[in-house]
Length: 139
Image (tube, rainbow, N blue to C red; front, side, top):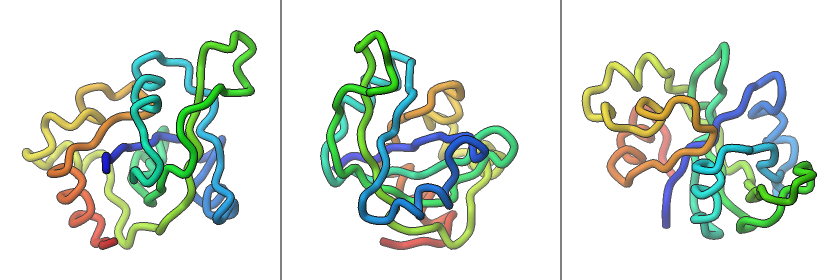
């Protein structure tokens, strides 16, 4: 199993929106960056990811799982970009802010910090465990 972080602007697609989709999940569409797209191509069903509110909130608010592997994104008229489908698993007990992440030395190499503009980034096993602990959440 691999771990990921999905960034979303809460005024466009929020954690509450994701929760409302329940078991049906939602396609993670609109990604037009090749590196983020390659990250999604590497995903397998059952992979887990943090759901991160970007822009004004800048915090991890939930956990999702991948329920459909990479497929073409119907919002892309060029037919070049794809998406995965994710489903809400649980809200985190304590949201983890970007400031908390940046202040944690063990997360200095975390892709969210190093590649802040990417909307989908990998999370190592060690980073996942640490962030779950910071979020006071267990699975």
